[in-house]
Length: 390
Image (cartoon, rainbow, N blue to C red):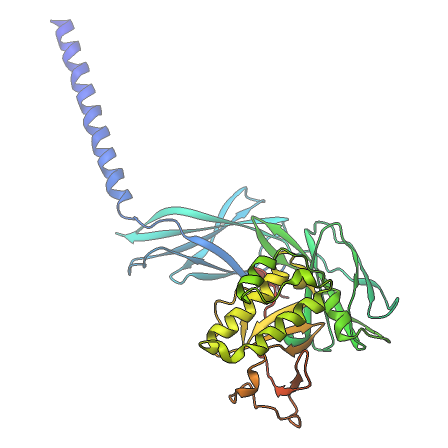
C-alpha cells in the first residue's frame, strides 16, 4: 500500500512537470511569434568622428505600428552591450562613444505588446576609431611632367588615398584620385601638364570589407615648370593587346591595335575609325556604345588608365558603355577634359552649344582643331563607404 501511494505520487509529480513544461514551451512559442521580423541588414555609416557616428541600415519588410529598432553599443567598462535608444526610422546618430580601437554596435527589432518589448535577432557593425591625419613631408618637381610626393606613415592604416588637381578647391572635374597600400608612402606623379598642382593625402583602414576614410591632410602645392604634351600624357598610360579581339570585332576588323606601338597611336586609330563611320551607325546611341566599348577594351584589362584617365559620357561613369543615351565620352588627363566623340558637332543642347570657339566653356577635341562647349557636372570618383567628419 505504501509503495503504491509512493508510485502514484511520483507519477502525479511527473505528469505535473510534463504539463508545466508543455505550457512553458507553448508560451515561449507564442511569445516568439510576437516578433517575426528578420534581423536588420546592410548597416553603413554615413559620417563618424572620435565620439559620434550616424548609422543606417535596411530591413526586409515594413514595421508595424507597435514595432521599432533598438541600437546598442558594447561598453568595455561594463563588459556588455548598453542600449543607446529606440527609433522607428532606419537611421540613428550615436554620441559620446567610448575611445576604443573598434566600437561594436548592434541593431535589433522589437515588438511592443501588453507593455513588454519582444526583441528579434540583431545585426552587428564593427566601427573603427578614425585614424590620425597623415601629412605630406616632401613635394618636389624632379623633371618634365613629374612630381615626387612623400607622406607620413600612419599607424594602423590599411592604405592611403592621394588626390592631386589643378584646382585650388579640389573641384571634382579637375581632381585625380589614387589609392595605395599600407606599405607605400611615396609616389611619382607622371604625365603632368605645365600647371600648379595641389596635392593632399589621407589614410584609410578596412574593417569587415568596408573602407573607413580619415581626414585629408593640409594641401601642398608645386608648380610643374615644364609639362608634357598631350601625346606624352596619353603614353604615360601603358596598354597591352588584351583588348585586340574586341576592338577588331567592334570596328569590323579595320582597327588592329597590334599595328601600333604606343597608347596614343592605338587611341588615335580608334578615334579616326569612329569619326569616319559616324554616319553609318543606326543611331547615336549605338555609335556611342560602340566607341566606348573600344576605348574600354583598350584600357580596361590593364586598369592602368584608372590612375590618370577618367572616362565619362555626359554625367555618367563610362566603363562598360551600357548607360549613355545622347551623351558623349570625354577623356580626363590630369584634370584636363578632352571630348572624343567625332559626331558631337551636330548637337545643340544644355551641355553642348556647338562649335562656338568664343564660348567660355569650350573644350578642345582630342585629335582635331574643332571646339565645342562642355560643362561636366559629375564624373567618376572612387567612393568609400564612409568619410570622416569632425
